Amino acid sequence: MTDMRNHLQAMFADVRRFLLTEGLTKLGIVQDNARGDVTKEFDYLAEARIIDYCTREIAEPIRILTEERGEVRSKSGRAAWTLIVDPVDGSENFARGNEFSCVSLALAPGDEAFGPDDIRFGLVGRIFTGTVFEAEKGQGAWKNGQAARASAVTELSQAIVAIDFNFKDKRAVPRIHRLLTSIKDARRYASAAYELVGVAAGGADAYVDVRDTLSPENYLAAYLIVREAGGTITDRFGQPPAPIRSMTQGQSIVAAATPALHTAVLEALARDAGGHPDVNR
Image (cartoon, rainbow, N blue to C red; front, side, top):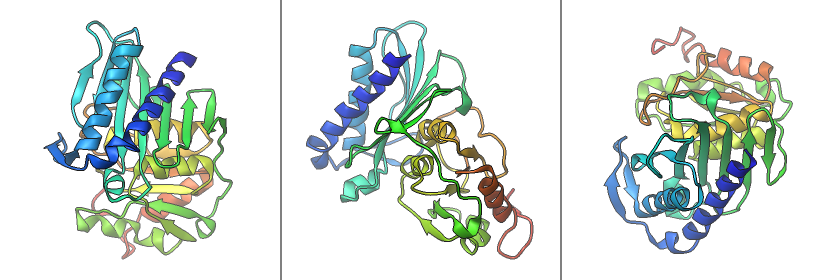
């Protein structure tokens, strides 16, 4: 088991070296991915390095689910592990020289269908600072090798909440109105994995994305890290995130440091700005 954690660390170190050198100049667009988003060259090449690492350094076959290429196999045969890859979460930040970007790697055992609770190892590494957040299921979460723990905040009035405001469907904006008027302060870094691991280590008290568009590579590694750091994480209705059927499926995520704060966030989201039930539920 420890070997796989070491492999994730090595993948991140290799990709980070590339991104902070040659990758800084690879800003062109090479394709549109399966979600219809543009793929920049640094994303594509960083992903290729992770695939190459799995092929060269890991003896067992690995099924690799990627943001830019879809499904790739490192070797023929039944896969021992499924690796879910976001080579650069916060691509627009990286391209503009903003430092809020990270590499996200999640590992689930085997070759079958899986859900968020099946993730065995997760790593989110911040590209510019080199800060590494990790978790192993049932073993805890770590920030740079030291135990990570979510905050003890229980009340919205004391909570700093990271919120994704990038609503393509503007009709969904009222979902966060009551929350915005109830919390201590809000944050927005434009990288879901970056913001979620902040909850795991106390940098934020909650993370909220109610757009129903978050794709698996953005949150699966951080999901495990938040859980192992003592946080609570569900969809916007308080239900477990859906099983992974496609890398393009949309998901809402609500993560909080404590159960009491999580309940308070869900209650704030339960009604729209006019005090009526959320018609988009």
